[in-house]
Image 1: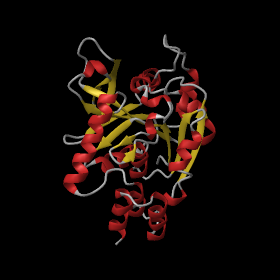
Image 2 (image 1 turned 30 degrees about the vertical axis):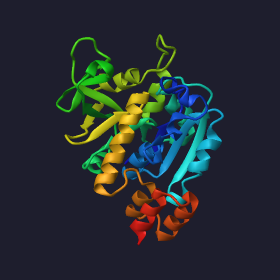
Image 3 (image 1 turned 45 degrees about the vertical axis):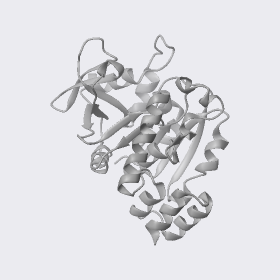
Image 4 (image 1 turned 45 degrees about the horizontal axis):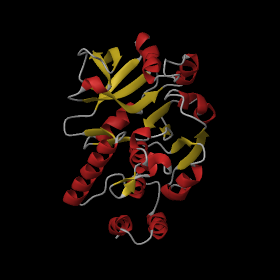
Length: 288
């Protein structure tokens, strides 16, 4: 059972400059909540309580203002600063002392997931004992993503932004690994971009027939908020769902309450912390 998770919230966010010159992208709002709430909520829905958030050097205090240490959510949050991005697999090298001998999940800080059967799918993913698991989602433009071809639920081919059609199943930014991930990450050589590549890491598992897949079903959504256009599309999506259906996506306190990690007392403390806002009014509603 995976009980530890990493959120990779570093990166320069250059595609969203000049917005990201002063503020980290994951602290910008997706509708009424900072982007970081959304990947954090996914780990919490997966029942993961021990979380490491990797941030850029010099931005730690900004994060601690909004998510101090996880106590009010009944979880444990550690932070780690990186001096510069070295590719996704570097998270497992940087986070070695956090992971120790456990298996680990990793989610990219700018990825958004939504779907009715999401908790069920996450529950399956966290049960991994050996090997690695990726979450796939059908897309209409596979040439823009890393894609996977699947045979008998095992991944046979991985291609990064293929020019010729290989598969329409995009590899999302949500991964589940056994403890060998630290060793494999250390064995990787930097690419032409001078970064460690997640595709190379996944291929180490694939070559050993240890890479499997789960899927975001029809009606579910995966959105990458890497560009300004995608960022606002995601914000509009959240706004439409919340205002139509009356519940909040990525309400951290609600997830903790449903998981029995906190009681009403902690929710009241959160209401005081956030102040007079729509998010607080929603929290008042769920405990009344």
